[in-house]
Length: 361
Length: 174
Image (cartoon, rainbow over all chains, first blue to last red; front, side):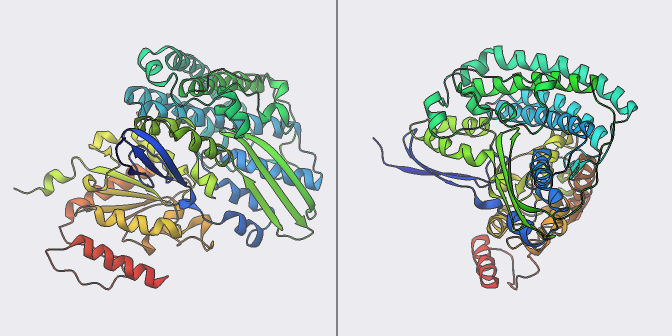
């Protein structure tokens, strides 16, 4: 074999949307060693949550941990706080939260699928996916008032109600989106060149997934039945027709297919929510000071998101701990790279949909 | 021939995330996608600093991204413009005075256009880019230095030495 060559990948790279740094040791085309560095975007949010911000403000700060799954972070925090303080959230607020969280999942999944197509060299599909993603963004804007940082959920309920006019437009857009999502599923499942490129590349086996604690769509693509939506009761998912999508195989192809199928399931759930939205208040006042500790698990678009908070009858919490899905997925990425061709690396990294601003916080 | 006339016809973008929440980054991506489509201004997103004219920076600049940002800035050829996208790139936003951030891009490199918003809307980003194009047209070949840097530049500029000098000062400041 030839001598070792060091190839840096990141922190700024053509194929990378985010600052993560991999240093690969390669022999010819094969990778023999890899180092990962995720700390480029560390801002110190956990520390600030426990020193600077009052407990009612923290929900808006943790939303800025990640713009892609903003509702998941807020949801994790407010659910933990509500359970700690024993607040009964109105049913309508829960369903509205569920609606936004599913729409958020759709846009995040479409983004991930589009990116994977782009690094595979299929720019046309990337543009098409992003075009259909704009529909979801418009819906989210109508519903919450902002395109990315919604600040929709707040302790005790939600900040904005769904009006009948908005509901009408949502239904129209959802109908178009469903058509487009079906078409996208078809392309991601059956396109010849994509299948050729992705099938059997970057395979995570079921044992590997179990051993390395993979979460989210990569785990379900490997055949591991894990989804917090089914395991932890934080929103009424079962009532709106949630189904777990599990595939066998574990390569890039299956990961994207899981995302495409979950998008369809999420659209179905959105229909059910719009049809059966209960009447009532959207917010109850939160009084008192948090005391004790509480943890909550949330299924963010990328996998399990874990929140732990501890308070001791003060306006400022003692501790906020966040464990994010990408952090759980990095060990298996590292394992995958050893023995892989360097040319497959960008596609594999993007297919895990890494969110570094979550990971480093 | 006057290249200024043609310069604003096909500016290429370099995008760097210095610790933002990804919100502004996906809005920049949405700008490149069909609905907002900045390619009608001849704009392409290329990840290569040596070919780029516009540097789009998001995020409040974390302590570790600081050096990378300076490196990228010096690798870009003149004339170039810097656009700070988002509330946190302008002033630090919600992350202001957290222990690991620098409170805005203009603390590290000179900024020409500020785009506000959390997250900045695609319309605002496009407006910022178009304003940046006007500035790009007026700019010459002079090397701009960060306000905290005391180095004197005389053409011809040795970029490697200049970067070393700036990095030294940056680390000295810390």
